[in-house]
Length: 91
Image 1 (cartoon, one colour):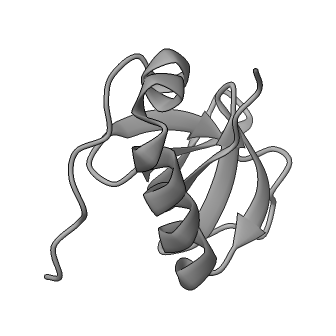
Image 2 (tube, rainbow, N blue to C red):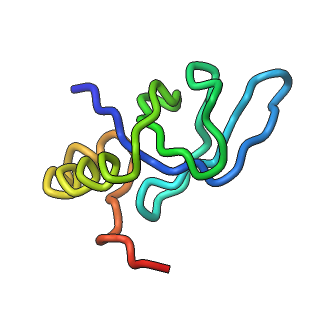
């Protein structure tokens, strides 16, 4: 199964010429390559597959998708290597 997981870009940096980011997936943070989403900036929501951001989405779509994925916790755990925490709390 191939999953695209939505997450929010927390920070971006250059890694020997490759544009990278730290992305938050509702509490799980992972390094992600931004080569396929050159317009992504801090605060942008992206869909990530195998460590690559493949497209941008809006916050509402990201929240809806994360809710569905939480209902399919086993599939998310297989993709990320750990379960997503419960719903994010407003800050």
